[in-house]
Image (cartoon, rainbow, N blue to C red):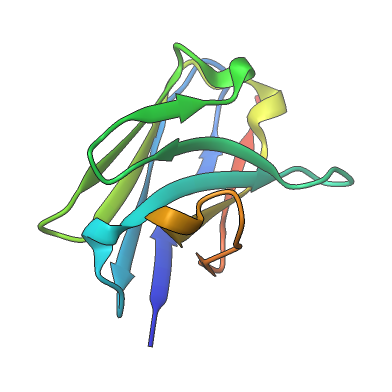
Length: 120
């Protein structure tokens, strides 16, 4: 049974940093594109960043240069390093795994989410 478990969220001041982690189990991790999405209060969920099996990455324009997604195919982990955080980065961050061939066409598996709050 596939399971994605996020950790690392919390409260941070503007300009601060957080590192989110997602532990995957029950899937052949190296066959999956992994992604981080977020949902702010009253807004739709949006794709923040994704990383394919080989390591190629893509980012939401508003986080480029501040966030870095990475993965460890041995430990079955995906990370999101978030620097220079802004209040508009506040939201629930979700880990998502989608089989490579179906990226963009299926929802895959989702974690429960971790809250990130950027506030002074």
